[in-house]
Length: 255
Length: 255
DNA sequence: ACATTTGTTCGATCAGGTCGAATATCTCTG
DNA sequence: CAGAGATATTCGACCTGATCGAACAAATGT
Image 1 (spheres, chains in turn yellow, purple, red, blue):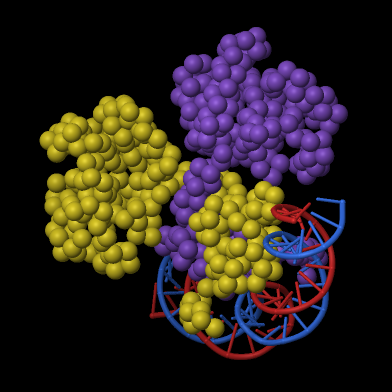
Image 2: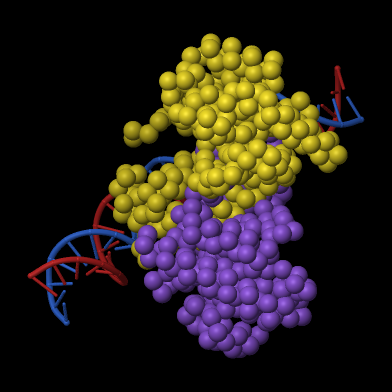
């Protein structure tokens, strides 16, 4: 069979299950036949997995279409709430948005990518809900760079090997050595900037959140370049970020 | 073996996988041995499932402890965003909170339970994040009752059979016939009240959200009894709820 | 350093996941 | 509304691979 010979000690049936889940998301719901055709497995196999998914609430059925169920939302909220920095990070983001009027974020990392954990839209009330939960490369994200700067060099190398350094704009850092220089500077100055490295015309600043010396996530403030000048970032905004992290440190110290 | 003889055409290996996931949540993370002991299966079996979960990002490993991963959050946000009423419901909740100053909710239902989909804390800024994503019985929730009232009698019966009518306070409706009378009244008046039926001293009012004649969820406003009197609910608050649903109807009609 | 606990790997076995075909159910079209 | 075509579900048989127990490795505590 054309499958990878060694998925090294996992359980293939589970892989199939997750293939179904993944495809169900990519297709925004689908029927048994379509899933089976695309995965090139028997309809009855797909049906078996869907039956279990259904019973467990991870999938729902509308007519003949299967869709991912809100059990994912339930578990997702639980996982977010379990993050050590979530409760205090949430208050910090609320405060940052109030003080700066700009879009503010709490992010963390997992599996070598940055994940938007909590955000506020700023004065313009940008809808953050479409961004929440998404995973992005760390090298073009201010918070992501702040996190990367606090990982070991081996970890950074592993992440770059795994995910690469794709360009988003012409300012994106796509060279491994340039990235390492940048991370060195971030460590020295204690904050990371994003000058249109992700989206043209969007600038941001991020600071790391560490607990007991271990990097747990980052706070960031982002906005259009005309309001989020480098000077404002490194001045007023950075002051607020520093205040926010100080408060988180205190909250967690007395946890 | 003591397992149910007929799990009727699902895949048992998947059941085990979800048992692991569920237990990992109940224990807030655990090691291989503990999981294997509690589930009464071999350590190597648990290890196999965890390996796949790990590769897929649904589980992370801190030292020797396994924890549920943020992939659940990623998928959860996706599923919420897919709900037809989410975008417009979100704006409605924001508006309700602004207008009433009280805690406001968008809920929906799946598998016979109500699920908090989006909420705002009101003037007192109650932390809604611990509630988001949780599933509750529908019969002691104003939004839940509003939804129940728009399901067929067979569906209501099925739900009551499956989940029962447990009491939360002495005001909870625990009798099937009394519930059906209440649902009848809710259909007539177009809104559902919750007078300390869930939590002592908390009152709420909910209205159904239907799309193309099908019930999709509910909006509700909740607060302490001294502010959320029956009169205020059925007067000022109901007016705001009606305005909110009207706007949702318009938004969705022109989708 | 040793004992104990926990995590991971390995080989053998037989439950059960997978497949393909048959049947049931739904949908469209004339 | 009948019948054709598509889709979902069920069934039986095969043989992969999920499971187990034991052996090994790594980590933790004393």
